[in-house]
Length: 363
Ligand code: MRU
Image 1: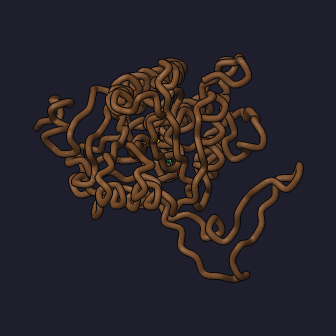
Image 2 (image 1 turned 30 degrees about the horizontal axis):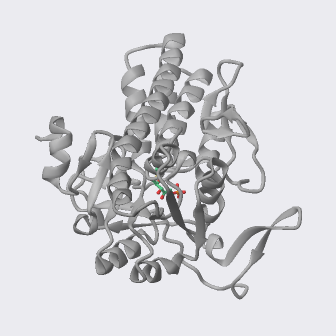
């Protein structure tokens, strides 16, 4: 996507040919700063602290983390240790394990410099693959928006989204927001209701920032507003991302997604989940019992980060010493999902639906 006329991806190899550039997402929306990652440790910290975040981007970052680790030490021991360390950084998004496995398979029979170059090449390949998968999701998902637009006589299609599943969460384009960008660029009027997405406010900070930068009409709402908006007929469709989609179509996404799906069902609003193939975990069936849910620091609940004048500050919003629990994701059952928007097209959120698009996983 373009920022002030310059095209950016969220991750790239710097001109030195080996270090990894990222947009530091912990500083947005107040500051647009590029960070340079040079070691495995720095990549692990970047993923854990959410300088890079969003399931697809986490996967590609981990792939580059492996390349950096191998550049320092290309031994089997180093490879296995790096996979273990990166794999433990964030548990819910399966894209992380997916990417690590792809790089491992690409380098396991190589040694030395060949192993290092193969790791970089694979990481770059996964980044490109993510961009084209998201672009395809954009094309398929935009059809849903066009369909609604057809009945609205130039009134904007009202879309509600949760968290950030835009280009910042991927390498480019985004998953849930890719159809929005596509429709907007095609001249179809859209308007996005953006859930603030407590506790880290990815909606307020990141989704609003990227939609506004692209000129897409959008309005920030409190996390709890979605139900009201749907009751009032102010939402035509919900479109969210997924960090892990099970074989039968259950989806884990940012905490609060499930409540939006319930409200959508109660109000007859279609609830779509944009699911790139890298987010599908073919090993799991039951999302609720099988998907590991990340629990993050309670400090993300008791404190909030914001700008005061020119200074970015963290302030406490609960009584000092308050006990807090920070479940980062929840699971929405397949039955609440109207359809999955995959990179191979739309399908029902069910085993049969997914297999119809990915027949190679039928056994
Ligand atoms: O904790 P985050 O910011 O990494 O969570 C991101 C989300 O929940 C996204 O919706 C999800 O990764 C899908 S993104 C394309």
